[in-house]
Image (cartoon, rainbow, N blue to C red; front, top):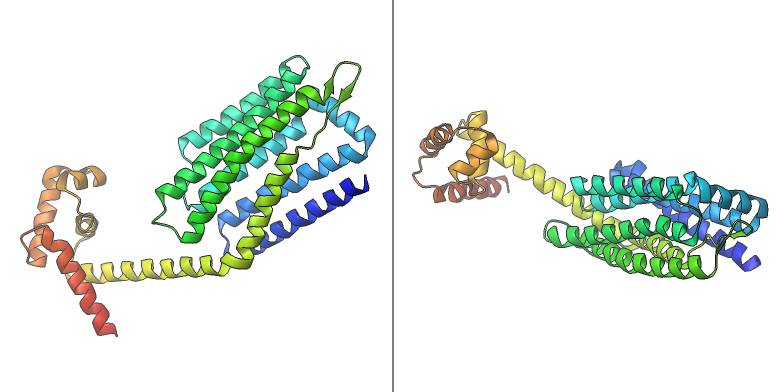
Length: 320
């Protein structure tokens, strides 16, 4: 029991260190990613405290397990908190937003955990209750790998590597946790009306949380300054490009609508694509494109990008 006690203390210390680092980063930078990650780690701490209490307080364990078999409100709250903030952390790490499938998956997860407790008490009921949470972790892992692949050349190398690592870890451990749950629930736990004994701790889940927390700490020790530097450079570059664009448009006296269309011309968009994106008629777009060509004294679309880059290069040379 002493070893279990020390183990729990070390877990909470590890989670708290990681949580302190993420909260400090959020207070410093106000980035939603660090806030989401902080909430995710907070649910780790809450879950481990409850499990610890079931291991050392017999009366609490009995009441908690009975409540779990009837109305598992506490566990459902923890599972949903973990699910929401785990997925949110991955999405925000890639600087993206939830899409419709994310919302649908979360709703289905919640509905499943509300429906399963209505079944008669059995090992199968408990197994079915836990199953979708690991399937959701598998989904988050696939989502992380997809984001890593999709935005590999649009994010920093640090972001790409962490998305890939989290994706692989989530997939591997979701399968491992399902296997451990299957063995423990059907072979170790007891769910009869006379004897109710539940082993609430999942070793694979603990290992996963330890690795994730360690990755967080490793990030702040080795990669945080590098990541911040990259983001600052990207922000500065974006601001500089926006200033050049505005200066160019003002120099040629573009109207606001002409600026909108000129920006799309720089992206090699065709007239119909511009019309669809700006909700304009094709004739209106053609008229604006003609006016832009007249102001720039050019005749071909291929000259738009060339002229723009030439003027920007001249401006940069002059500034130096």
